Image (cartoon, rainbow, N blue to C red; front, side, top):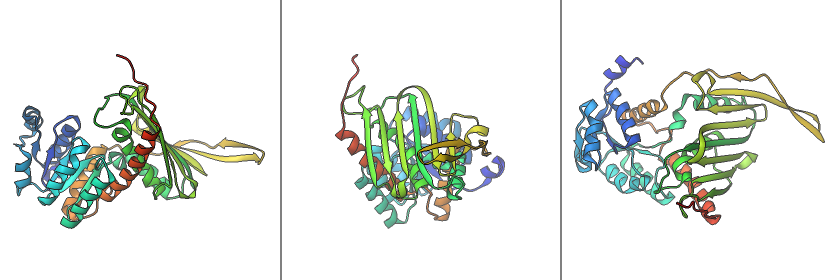
Length: 337
């Protein structure tokens, strides 16, 4: 669909709640689509600055809830606000998109899902990498059996970035990885373990490593950190026939590659042999735009979102189990100064 045609489409009307860095990205996309109906933020100056390029009104949260011209709310908020404000939005009859994670506990997430179901409202979670063209292509390879039986998945999300104080590295960074791994596994893990480093705060992990064990033998490892000298966003999937690498730091023509392999030699001296590697063509596309379009489509059609509340709950369950394991192994070493 061309941009000109896209702007002519009558999308549901959306108000973005939260005009911070990521909220402004949502404002831009919904503004480009012609679906932006308002912006809500306690910081009126930030809200006005975000709204100005699109001529969108700055609203209070109560005004957004009361407006019959607003079909849905998009939350780009600290996750602790998703339940109290999300409850009000759903009970007011609004469809709801929340940036990951769905909530800070499984119980809170279950409450949001229950209200959405009772009110027949779409509830969607911002697991944005599920809408990345390269991950979609990788998942297609796995589902089609092109990699063979899946053996292991390793996901890394590392950077020297913003150090949070409301949530740790596990909750801030790993939801993306958990969502992708659950999609590949097609089931929930039997075993969850985690460890991490508490370097800048005695109770908030700056680094976390999570190990997941699934029925059938699939093993997955996640490593996240905001204290790393360079940025890395990579997903490696190993199957019995081939290995696939989704490296989001690479150019579009190199984001997804496949390495065939086989096991040769005797049982007591096996060796892994490489086949000829190749790249999978991926059509460039902004994942956030695809995610926003999917939300608008689901609001308009009544279809169930790919990353709906139930999918968000499955991710929460893994995060909660990982967080408990991480806390049980806490060994803080706090940096001086």
